[in-house]
Image (cartoon, rainbow, N blue to C red; front, top):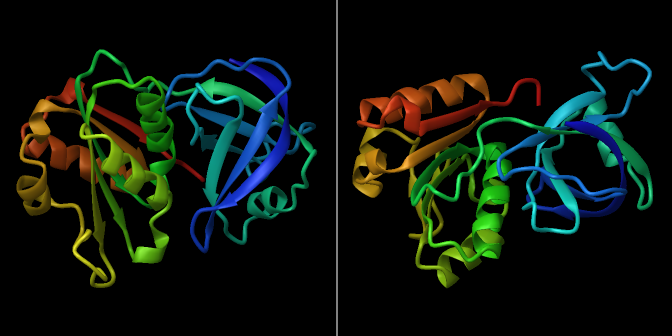
Length: 236
């Protein structure tokens, strides 16, 4: 883990409230798919939790840039991130986290809600870049259609790669078409659409309550404890 300066090079709107921010590192930065970093806006007070926050990489280590993605809010941190101009330099600390992809795992699954998709993108982009045969099933829950971040990329991958399957589910409105399911991720939904869940290494990213609920659900459906990988997003 080290601190390096990165240059802001691009922003991409993913949904009406979610944006990605890309940076060019000034020196090589090694990280594993699924890890996260800390953006340090207040260098004089490292304990400033309002301005120094942790975000997952949403880009693969194979890319020449690093990307983070956030649902922008009314927070001080979001305002500072939103005010970045092309060419601005930012200090980051990386890489952190042990909930990472292992290419030796031949079958993996993701139980994800909302902005928890960010480290999933790093892992999937890596699998695609390396042309790995890993069997993937992503179950991705959002409240409405327009809140599905990275849908264009996910739809393209599931069309092009037979080993990548994506199941979208919406919780607050009926889907506009049959490409989405309706309802929360629960035992019935998983039993119906991911019947081989217990055969997969399961990744769960998100806020603590959601992570614990999905972890318990995985265990109830027969997944081994050591094959359920979790990462809590605290204060994101």
